[in-house]
Image (cartoon, rainbow, N blue to C red; front, side, top):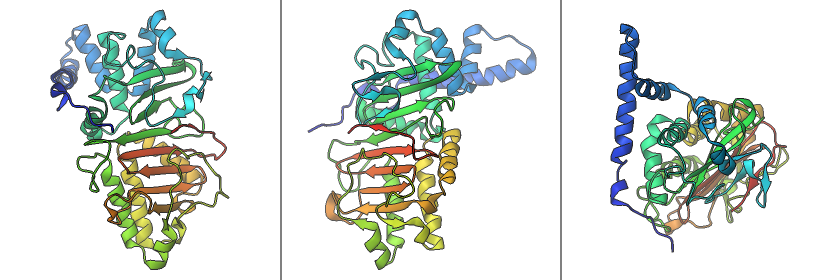
Amino acid sequence: MSTSRHCPDCDLPSAQSLNRRQFVQATAVAAAAASSSGLLLPPHVARAAEDANAQPEQLVQRLYESLSDAQRSRICFAWDHQDERGLLRTHVSNNWSITDPKSLNVGGDFYTADQRDMIEAIFLGMYNPDFHEKIRKQLQDDAGGYGRAQTIAIFGEPGNGKWEFVMTGRHLTIRCDADSTEHVAFGGPIFYGHAAQGFDEAADHPGNVYWHQALKANKLFEMLDGKQRDLALISTAPYESEVAFRGAAGGFAGIPIAELSADQKEHAQAVLTTLLEPYRVSDRDQALQCLTAQGGLDKCSLAFFREDDIGNDSVWDIWRIEGPSFVWHYRGAPHVHVWVNIADDPSVATNAAG
């Protein structure tokens, strides 16, 4: 049985990370003061201040330009590169790495100190700042901390045509693509998860940074009447990685959200807001635009599954929102795994593996 790994130096954000964040904040203030007074900042302070305000897309291009030929040969790929996993750029799984996590992890010596800082800024820049400490906790519990087992890959050439930056690891697939990947949100399918206190979590999932999402969805189940619950509650869940789009005629499991009452629909929207909350504003907006293009939540169904109800407490650990080209599959047993695939066109293909 898998267990969480703990490191005394990583129980809280490391002193190095904390000092760096404090330094960037301080230099941003210093930059503003210098600008107003006409003073020139030292180059390393000016760069830190610039990075504090840079968007992930800008930093990916800067990172790419900083890579040596030897580095590019290890982590950079053609836009349509394939291997035994298929089209690698669109692959998603619950625990995987595009490149070698031992020699190419983002906290290791393969990268310079400046490159490591840029990668961390890119990564954190893809999340809502209010969620940063939670994502650090998730990485601590699942992988011993940020930088230890996460890797990156760059597809295409940033600044010249289509490109995509992907970070992978245990319970992690996150993308940045400057909208190069047409029709999709988040640059393609993403994955998040958390095993807060070991492989098998208790019914209330103590310490899990994503369990509040399930509680929000279960509040909606509690609002359903008897007939609605009969529609919404299914015995057996689909396999978690089955997130390919099924189109408008998909026959989605569960209760159609269009059939909910006004207050139930309002809560369904609140569930969606909670699901999107960890991510940066631009990705949230793009996900909502994709959903709107296919008819909004009214074209989706909501299903809860009796299977793997931890504690037999009828707080359903597995649930799913699905529409023509929208899949958000939440599996909370034995710990949290979440698969997300959103597009404005059901013909977009997904390359998922369990």
